[in-house]
Amino acid sequence: AALIARGADPKAEDKGSLTALHAAAYAGSVDVAAALLERGASLEAATSTGLTPLAMAVAAGQDTVAAALRARGASEKGVSEAKLLRTVAAGEVEQAKVLIAAGAGTNGKGPGGLTCLAIAAGAGQGGLVRFLLAAGADPNAADDSGRTPLAWALEAESRDLAEALLAAGADPNVASEGQMTLLGAAAMAGRRD
Image (cartoon, rainbow, N blue to C red; front, side):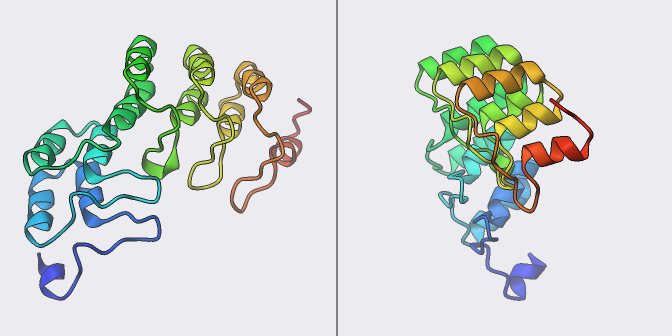
């Protein structure tokens, strides 16, 4: 409240279009979210990856904030994809299948621009990676730092998943933002595979 009293705009966005309300939703701070809304924050502000504050709360597992935002009339835009992100992060293959069958998109992006496929690849979740690829997940979707699911799989040292991603069309020549290519990183680490 002190920053707002000194002129801070509750609708101000960072370079990824993240607002203070998104941050409060992610952190699970119901009181801060309420104060921001009382001072003009937008329930429907979307990040550069399309996350509204409600979708951010759902993706972060902040159910109390999500309920408070819904009570204030937040739309459900992007919420099914946020639920899928959370489900994949928990490694729940069967629930992911249910959500996708109900219409959740496989290429939604969560905090940091992470996709479900990147999360599953980074966690070495082979069943989820293969299911998501079969359901249409983009093997080349980069997160905010330019890392693709293939980069995440290689970091997790999962050659199996890297092969599955390559077979699905992952580009091995993509370089993360400010980083070298995957082959360059492997060479730097002394890896021949």
